[in-house]
Image (cartoon, rainbow, N blue to C red; front, side):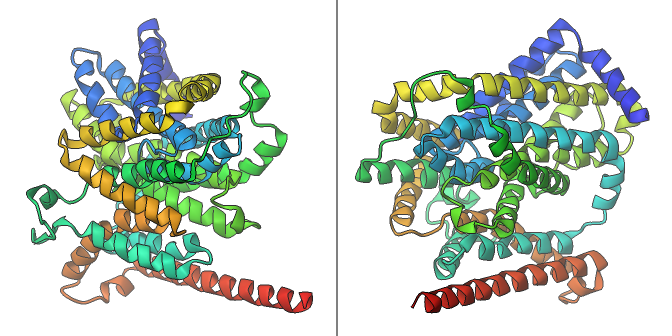
Length: 504
């Protein structure tokens, strides 16, 4: 009951015309920022931070959190319509949403993803409201060994993402690990593969995904002369409001994605990107028709979309209760809280509870506004794409170039984007999966850093992974995942062989 009373107190603080306008505008701004390739939560919050100077604390924090949630909604728009993910968590959305767009179901894909995003955000907010102190008290027991094993578990999902392309997946995973080693080593400072000074800080991940998915798709479509099937012009509600069949297919994946996204969002450093890849692998493993993934599968779209939105409130839990940012976006939020004179940590909700609960109430309101605006604007998105279809390749290339340049205001990232655009084209043309490559680029540096920290904690002994109960449990779970994956593949090949023999 205390949580309900505190939330009502927060709503009493923000339900003024000024704050409501701020929250609504923040959601729309976040949606636009999230849709632009190269920009994401961190960039959106950073761009809005100067506007909060002079604002009341509650209003300023509602503006920033509204933009944060809005970017998660917006990332799916360009992912589905033009296969150019606005940010890293939207990569999985592109894998299933863009094929639906090519089939003339782009509006439906936008509708399903909007509803799943709303449910994921709502679930994460409920956890934030009721269980934040309890969950955060357990998260504090995770150390480098546990984080390393979580990252290793993520890499192990390459087996699940690969399907029948184990050899190709392994090859691109190794390439992803190699790409992740460019730049200075986090622990020792040793510089690796820095052929030019710009590579000392490594290769920007966003430049990689812009090239791999945005430019790569453009090059492939230009060669094949692909034309999008946008369906018939019109604003009929049935084109973008999911029906009973679509909702029943998306319901269970949305619930699983909401739970997984919230839990992984709580883990500092994991974030929505890792959560969406893990959820996609889970949905593919649980599906009765895993071969349909990558061709417009609703479960593969709804689950990850719920996951990345649930990760937003989840990542706020360690920020508010421990003062530990759970993602890049919350790292900037940490600076904003300090700028407002607040002290994130165990005493924050005691000393500044009115401001914190106003921020949470603002996030609830932003989630509702975002559902309404994103559903109502679907016809605008689709018909805007229809209007520019003749020059779509030019539009996508322009967005990609601007997005890559804006990362560091340097032409170097444009060259990086071009290199990975060619790589993405070659991978698509030769049927190499991109998921394992991206997963390796994201997780390999984290796994390396946590492994070295773990070994140092264990004074050079790897027994530290077996001596800690939580890390031992994760090891057992990872072994079970690999065993089930191998067993499933063997059983699938046996059934295929039996079916072939029966056909003969």
